[in-house]
Length: 287
Length: 264
Image (cartoon, rainbow over all chains, first blue to last red):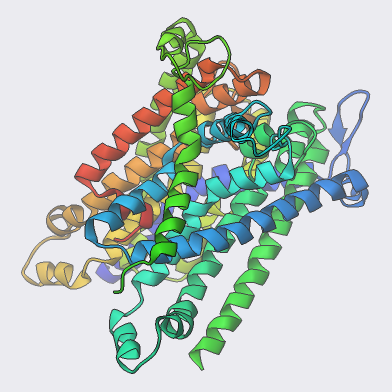
């Protein structure tokens, strides 16, 4: 009796959350997958029947190719820059002294808690033709004409880096916390230079943190909506904004559903491949 | 550890400047006395903060977001605490699958969740209702709360509970006197991070919000889509200052670095 109750306890405890997830996650996802196979009548706006046409449109149309390529390109560039600036920052933070370390950790990470819309507005104000950056450059005589940043891919990438880089800092920071300072002291006492210590001891242990951080950053950048919508404008479409247009602009829900499912599939495929690579790397480090 | 060199300090300074630049610009520009957005250099004015009071759309959306965040964080924690107890204290078939399911809202693009909710709510006839939006927010923020409660439970020693039982404590007493005190910091931290996630969510909410159920970030997004003026900068400044205030309170009671970096 008691052991049976003990065995059913975890199921009973997680049942409310499980039912909630079945109703509000699994059902809507199944419905949207079903919708993506329905035909859409442009004249009546009705949906029904079974068709692969939406996927043929999404995967075959150069217009959507460009959108998907742009989205992946933006996400890759954002991830690369986040690695280049986020990982060193986490390393420098970890080497700071007591009060400064936690102060700057909070300064670095706190933008994470401020609405993406607010942060993107800040970049829009910095980037505009008469924005702060162009005004400063003009005042210093460094640029003869305003540098275009708003409505450019570079602008979107910079704003996305700002949104996503705290996640890279967190991942690398967590990996650095697991580093044993005794190993570093041992290497130094055995005559290793600071660079050798970094290359042979710090770096290999930080790589898993960089990899898991890149996964978060990539997913975030590939499905970002507000930032590309505000900084990219109407011309520079990414998958998220294109899906929004199909759903709330042209009202072609089945096509929008197909775009969303393709995004989900591409995202999942990239994550799984990445995970496999990470595992292989781990195996190599274990040898 | 050795100290950072000049390069490290320069790099760090630039990094911090990069992180703070957009926030500083928004706050600075909101103090402009002019009609258009510009950096005020000679005079500062609070006129655009007074202007917020004449735009009830932002004030209504603000209270709507506060209510939504409050209720969805509370509901999410009510679901997450028992689930975390099950996952942290029991080994059972299907456990790994449950963990993956419960954390999956973190890796599913919010756009996909947005369209899925839009379709779902249209089909069952709850479009634009508060209940629908509430359910969607609870789902999206659930993993954040779950992770912090899990962290609090897994870093504590289960041997304490076994000791309590062997000393004759009932299961209820163990829960009340041992587990609950262990969980409280995780639950409080999880609630706050859930509230913030709900308050900030825009990608999913933009699909399911209607004019009668509009959160503040979605309202601001639609406003920025039309025009960028000093009013939206002053609203943003209020949001930034309130977030900092909340962070200061959280730092006092729980430790902000623990929430952000997730040390148990």
